[in-house]
Length: 265
Image (cartoon, rainbow, N blue to C red; front, side, top):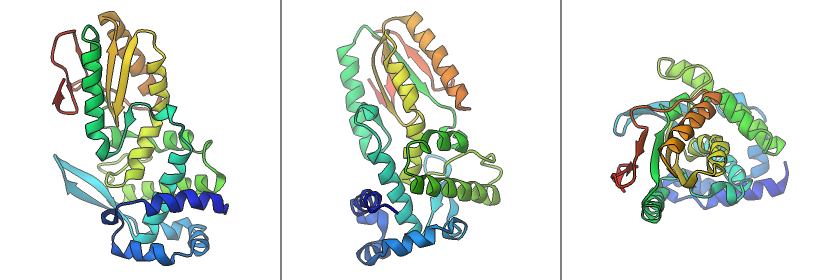
């Protein structure tokens, strides 16, 4: 394996908060033999065999992922490699991390003040993480990842799908879904929507746009532009086997209070 690739991974893992890693993981970081770890990953059917699903109560019961120290090292390392390959431009005003929520709300408020005459489209994706197709994730990532990491991603997605069908077949369709509780899953889903972000920004009727995971806020010139944009967005999501949540997707006229991420704008 290319040592340079491991450096991205090592940097990512070592930057994580100790609470996320756990004490055993921290001890492992000090003594980890990355070559040995890599040799173990060569047998993904064994390496990812102990990942487990469990239900956690948030605002509703949601499936989360549980994994051991070595699996965690590799998954966070994979996240670091993916993030390294993204340009700053691709990340503009799109957010997926919990600590970015306040930033997203501040940006949304700034746009509302800057464009008081704009129509505001608030769009939400139906059951986003439950509905993400594994094949679309692989299509989006494999062409951009070094071969080593592409292989790890394929092996992991296959192991995850097998686990979901074994433990929660009533919740997850085969080939679909990402459990919560691991930042890599937020990144994989977030990355999938980047082409849609770029398409929206290129629309001449769009004044401003931001997204937090599957919540989109779009400021457009007028009502016809809002309707046209929603039609185009529906088509783009359909190509990814996703759809809008019609109960949470709203068009706000100028002067009417808009709501985004639970906050009033």
